[in-house]
Every structure is written in structure tokens, then in C-alpha cells.
Image (cartoon, rainbow, N blue to C red; front, side, top):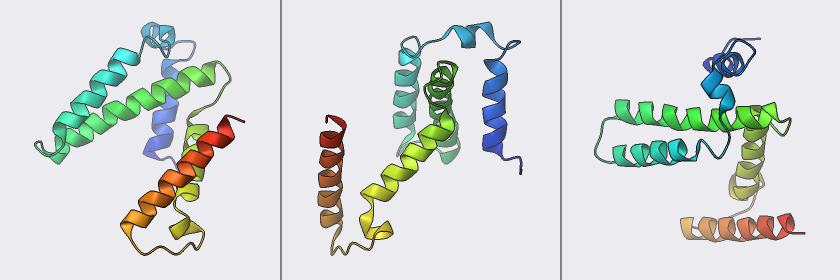
Length: 129
């Protein structure tokens, strides 16, 4: 298997949360990380339109850190892992882009947005069943 940067990142998280990992990291919960998620999101938003792409890249990394952290906590509780998060996102993107992946014909961006909203509403309805 090719060693990608993403695989290296997953290995780092496994190490940080492993037996000889970081005590602070291992003590975190979804709730304890909320302030950091909010802070990193705000910092990324601040980079848009007025900062360099280098700073934006760094802030996106900080957001990815939050995603990885939450996925690692869920993994520890045998709920899901980052691969499950990615698989769910892939399914959602394909489902919400039928004009790209399912041969649905559209004539405008507005029609794409309308379809997106309809699909999202259907997803929500199906989740509540």
C-alpha cells in the first residue's frame, strides 16, 4: 500500500491516542473540543478574501485536525472512524449531484440548487423514519 500523507496522518492520530500517546489528547471528548472547533472555524473564515493562500492552507489543516480528532474519539468508542466519515461524504456527494453522477439533466445552477435542497429534504425525512 502506498504511504500517502493522509495515511501518515491517520497513523499519527493512532499513535497520539494509543497506549504511549498524548494524555491530553486521550482525555478529550466531543464536548471538550467544541471551543477549538469554533475557534478554528472562525480563524479559517477570517482568511477568506483577505489573506494569503498559505495562511488559508494552515487554517484548513487546523480544521482537518478537528475532524480527525472527532473521528478518533468516535473510533475509540467503536462508533465510526475517519474512513467511515469519508465514505459517508462520498455517498452524499454522489447522491446530491445526480446531474453529474446519475445522468439527470439540468439547465442552470439554480436548478442544481433546487435539486440539492429537494434531495437534502428527502434525506432528512428518511432519517426521521
